[in-house]
Amino acid sequence: MKTKTLLLAIIALSIPVLAQAEDGKNGKKVCDKKHAHMIAKFDTDGDGKLSEEEREAAKAAMAERKAAFIAKHDTNNDGKLDKDEKKAAREAIISQHDTDKDGKLSKEERKAAREAGVRLPGHHGHKHGHKKGGEKGGSRGDSAE
Image (cartoon, rainbow, N blue to C red):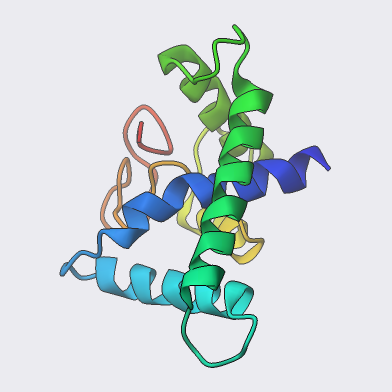
């Protein structure tokens, strides 16, 4: 149950970033996929678009997932995630999907996590912390935000 809640929260937290479509190589592709996913999930009347009521339901679901994510990782109980809490949450997510346990996510590990429905924090179609060709690089396997 914790994993499911975490996954849903990650998706919820990533939606505002995805809403700002990029014209770059990967940005548009990521946004189109996310848009299709949102339509499939919240288009209750099957017309291929979100009505005002469906949009409100999507917003409510995202707010609920965000609140659950914050509640899970808000160790000082102030209702928000500070820098240390965000770092701990990111590390927990990475640790869960770091199959070779080297402290970073390889291209393959990222792909497997995404296929499992995980939206990795700070990873929005860019190659943060990675060298060309998908090799691991940098001090972390993911970006801060």
